[in-house]
Length: 255
Ligand SMILES: Cc1cc2nc3c(=O)[nH]c(=O)nc-3n(C[C@H](O)[C@H](O)[C@H](O)COP(=O)(O)OP(=O)(O)OC[C@H]3O[C@@H](n4cnc5c(N)ncnc54)[C@H](O)[C@@H]3O)c2cc1C
Image (cartoon, rainbow, N blue to C red; front, top):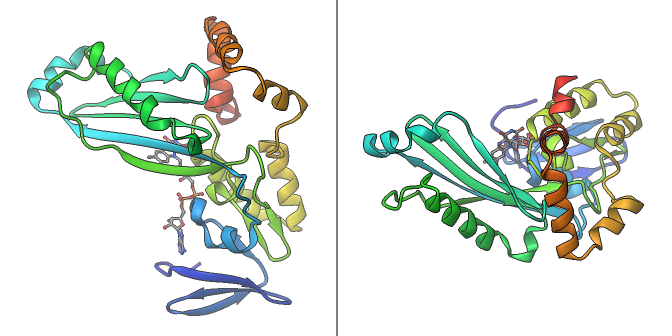
C-alpha cells in the first residue's frame, strides 16, 4: 500500500495487474479494489452494469445558535429515523449538541423522487417544531452509493477482488457500509484462493439479484406495498426486527 497516490488506470496483464498513477506504474499479482463506489479497480474490472442500483442521499448539517439550541433542548436526547412509507429509504434527524443533521436517502434514485421526499421531511420537521421556522438550515449536500440489489458488480476474478463500497456492500436501505467494508477487507486479505472470497461475501451479503419472492414483491402495486409496510411496522416487535436487525444490520453487528 502507498499513501497519497491517485490511481488513474488499472489494467489486467497476463500474470499481473498494472496500476497506473501520476507518480508511476506498479504491478502486482493481485489487486484489492477498495476505492469506494467510484473505485478505479471496479470501473476497470468489476463489470459495472447500467442496471446496477444506486442509492441517493442528501444531508444538511447546521450549527445552532444558543437560542435555537435552547428551543430544541426537548429534542436533543435521541436521534430519530423516519421510514419512508414505501420502505425505499428513510429520513433522519440527528441532534448533536450545537448541531443538527437532517437528511434522507432512498433506493432507485434515478426516479427523481428524492427532492420531493426531502421537502416532505423538512415540512414535517418544521411542523413538529424540530426545525423552528426561523432556523435557516445549511444547503443539502448529495451523496450516492451503489448496492448489490440487481446487476451486481463482480466480487473478484483473475488478479483482483472488490471490497466495501467498491463491491456495493453497504446495506441498501440504511446505507450502513462501515461494517461490511471492514469485514470484506479482512476476508480479502485472508482469501486464498480468491474464489473463496467471492463465495463468502455472497454467503454473507447475498447474490445481489432478487430471488423469486423479491421479484414478486417488487411487482406489487404501490398501494398494496405501502399497506403491507404499514401493517408490518405497526407492531413494535416486527419494527425492531425489520428496521434494526435487518435494515440496519444490528443482528450481524452483534455476532
Ligand atoms: C454522509 C455519509 C454518512 C454515512 N454514515 C454511515 C454510518 O453512520 N454508518 C455506516 O456504517 N456507514 C455510513 N456511511 C457509509 C460508509 O461511509 C461507507 O459504506 C464506507 O466508508 C465504505 O468504506 P470503503 O472503505 O469501502 O470506501 P471509502 O470509505 O469510500 O474509502 C475509499 C477510499 O479510496 C480512496 N480512493 C477513491 N478513488 C481513488 C483513486 N482513484 N486512487 C486512490 N484512492 C482512491 C478514497 O480517497 C477513500 O479514501 C455513510 C456514508 C456517507 C456518504
